[in-house]
Length: 333
Ligand code: ADP
Ligand code: F6P
Image (cartoon, rainbow, N blue to C red; front, side):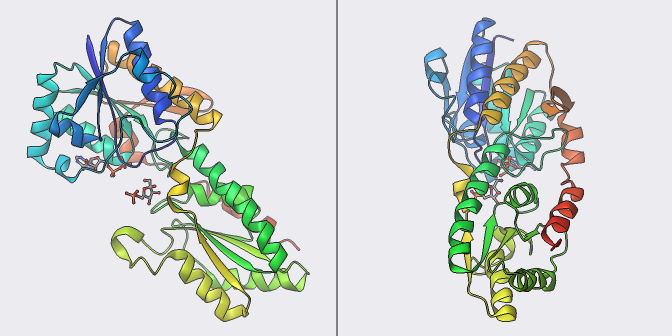
């Protein structure tokens, strides 16, 4: 293995740069040439592939986003697109590819594998919905961003005796909502994994009033009423639906805050920098050891290695006992 390439794909996630840096430096240290693919799989198709030396990855550990840029690339889902990508990898004489991304990116990596090309995956998505790792890159930073927002919203909610519905990211997974909601002492948390009970939310808002706490915060995952991207008009956000119901049933002054892409940006937390650094170095080690179709992960405080197949098949499941705990704490008066 003399020439390796690195690609960041799908939604960007804080900590991707840490992984790019560590994978690059580890490979240079082992005598390899390293290349960065620009704009996810799009750059493989168009041949936008540049050499990365140590200076190219210097000063990036603390930066959010990805210096390689990322993209969603529908063309790569086609056989034609994959063949163009493989041809470019051959033109650049790349021996192995580190794919930093989410489940979709790993499905793409598997297509390259099927064509005989070596790939190693690094899990990165703020959604944290990737199997075979307790934590994906970017999740910790996103939760801290959402929590910071909830803290600030609580100040103004308390001052004005209002209800705030805070919508966080998560089309299919409630990890951000659950962790930020529990850490932010939300009165209710709604996640896609659990059928929403809006009457229960109303009950809690009213009960809060009765006990003299006249503000409430409800944290809602964007996908609690189905996939917001393909399934719903932009005006019908989850926050809007929940807030409308609360306002109608309680008469309380109710506002919404949709955190949106703020959660994807920002300097990575220490956790994401450390994870990204170890993931990147391990991915290069695996490539150099001749492994393929593997994904690095973080489980029980250790770096682990699984196959991409295992990861895709298992997915990551939210711990519903955390939701039960949040509910108990929010309804004990
Ligand atoms: P993520 O990797 O964060 O889950 P996406 O689902 O958007 O993000 O996937 C990233 C990219 O991976 C897609 O834009 C596409 O290029 C590629 N991809 C996704 N699914 C497949 C698939 N079934 N086959 C081949 N490539 C795929
Ligand atoms: O996959 C990460 C994520 O941020 C999801 O939480 C969100 O639903 C989606 O990406 C948004 O995607 P885009 O930036 O393409 O609109």
